[in-house]
Length: 285
Ligand code: ADP
Image (spheres, helix red, strand yellow):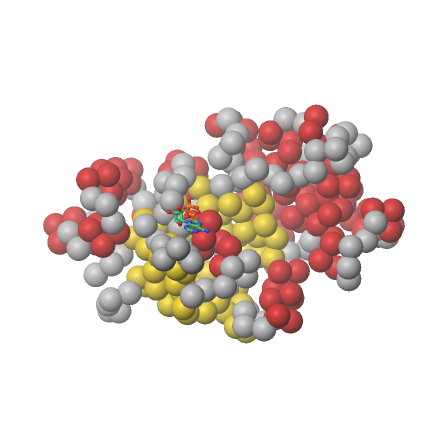
C-alpha cells in the first residue's frame, strides 16, 4: 500500500485511462496549498464526481486537469497526447476538453445560437466574427441545441432564459466543441433541486451515449450517488474517499461529514484509526 501521499484508487475501465495525474500539487502564490500530492487515473467514458463542500480543492483540480493552471509539482498525463508540458500539447488538450461552469459564462446579449457557436472558437486561429462561422458549424450548433432541448429558444437572448436553460446552453457550447473530456465545475450549484436532477441526467446521458469522459464537481451527496460511476471525495486539498457511488453509503457519508466537521483536515480524518477501521474505503493510510 502506498503511504505518505494521497493516492486515489484506480477504477480502470477496459478502455483504459483518459487522463491521469501523478503526485499533482498546487500551491497558490500566497503559499496556500490547495491540492496535495494527488495521483488519479480517470477511466475513459467514466462519469466521475468530485465531491465535498466548498474550499476542498475541486475547482483547483478541474483547472489543473484542463491545463488552465500549471501544477507546482507533479504532472497531468492525457491519453493520446502525453504530459501537459508543452504549449502545443496544451492547445490540443484544451480543444478536446470542454468546461461547463457554475455561472454558465454566457454572453447575455447574444442569442442561444451565437453563444453555442463560441464553443467552436478553439477550432479557429485568431478571433473570428460570428458571421464567419461555417454552415457546417451552424448545423452542428443547431444539432447540440436540439439535444439539450432548446431548439425553440435558439434566437432568444441568453439573458432572457431561466437558470436551467442557461446551463443547457452552457452544455451545448461545451458539446459543440466535440470534446473527448467534459469537465464541469459545480454545474448545478445555482439551480433548484428538480432542475439540477434534470440537468445532470441530461449531462450524464449525453456523456454515456457519446462515450465522453466526465469529471463533475458537486457538493450534493445525493446527486453524486445518483449519477456518478465513481466518487472522489476531497477535503482540504486531499482525496479522502475514492470508490464507486454505491460504496458511499449513507452511513459512510454521515460518518465522513460528522468527522470532517469535528476535525479540520483530511489528515485528521485519515489518521483516525477507529474511523478508518470502521470505514475502510476512506483513503489516507
Ligand atoms: P472548491 O472548488 O472545492 O470550492 P477551490 O479549488 O476553489 O475549492 O479552492 C481550494 C482552496 O484554495 C480554497 O481554500 C480557496 O480559498 C483557495 N484558493 C483558490 N484559488 C486561490 C488563489 N488564486 N489564491 C489563493 N488561494 C486560492
